[in-house]
Image (cartoon, rainbow, N blue to C red; front, side):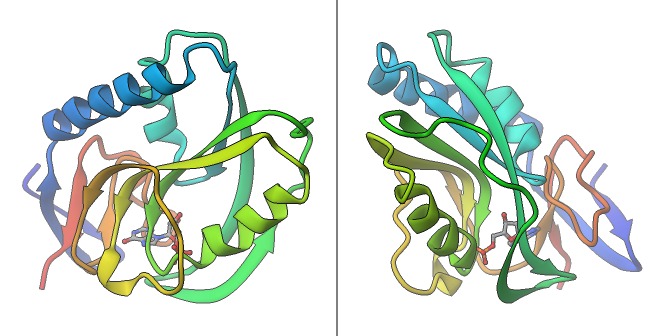
Length: 178
Ligand code: IMP
């Protein structure tokens, strides 16, 4: 589909399934090389990263564990700047090599809140993989170690990303039509 309508707004095709798939393979190869013998713990930030994580981990064929953490700082199309921790850590983080899997880094508020909390649990290392980043709106310092695509500030949906919970199911990424 070239365009989709969600909540009365029109979104147009932006990153195709093939483009995503190719980049996910590349990211998987880089992460595999670095973590082959580290038995990393992938922490998938829900809900948005579930599709990306599912595909990415099919390209990490080494020992690892996977955990899920749900937090949300978004309402509609703008960041509230507040983090809501809807879950608690249920993993032993101490001494582990952690890879945080994020769908998109926008303002960076989510990771600036989450990463320091994670550090208090004394992991051996923490790195971040994000499918998308919007560098023009990033506030403060959030380092993305493995990045899929840099995109402009326009709102995107699909491949796990939502607009008010709709649109996560589309296999490609759509951008709000101006
Ligand atoms: P940040 O805290 O501003 O970096 O935003 C991170 C979270 O906001 C992401 O994990 C998404 O859930 C959500 N988000 C940011 N930008 C978009 C977007 O363009 N579409 C859908 N969700 C977004």
